[in-house]
Amino acid sequence: MGKQPVKLKAVVYALSPFQQKIMTGLWKDLPEKISHKVSENWISTILLLAPVIGTYSYAQYYQEREKLEHRF
Image (spheres, rainbow, N blue to C red):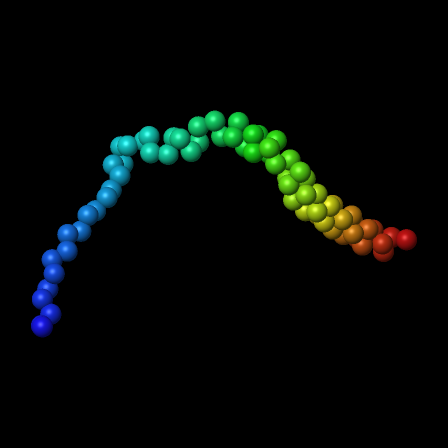
């Protein structure tokens, strides 16, 4: 009924610093993958970017108008 110690085996995984081919699959054909995703989901891309670009351009316009307001 007493507690008996249990020996645990620890497994240590490590990558060799000389191993350079670990993540090549991620970066392979990256521009092609991005263009495929954008062309596949172009409406979602437009709905995401349009408000962001619109808000940024409005903020720039407002700031420029406010800066030039004191001249008149």
